[in-house]
Length: 103
Image 1: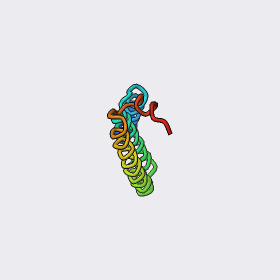
Image 2 (image 1 turned 90 degrees about the horizontal axis):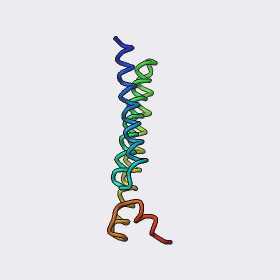
Image 3 (image 1 turned 180 degrees about the vertical axis):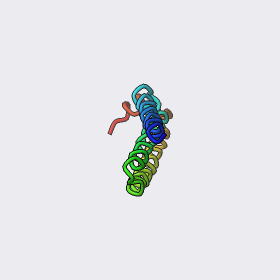
């Protein structure tokens, strides 16, 4: 029973990471890229918790996950601030608008 639970959780973690990676690689919109990075982070945190459960180190895994969540919040806040500035400067939120900026 526990092996099936671990395999299912790791499968979901890999699926979340792959979905996030696809969003980062395939899209031109900065919002979709940011959401893809967030989904990838959730896949990594699920993998950490699953590994901690499997190794009887759940407390350590939860500490790592908490640290990852804090880092994700900071990265998201900075990315959103940059996106707001880009929207004000160019009127668009895509990769091409960023490439046109000079200086």
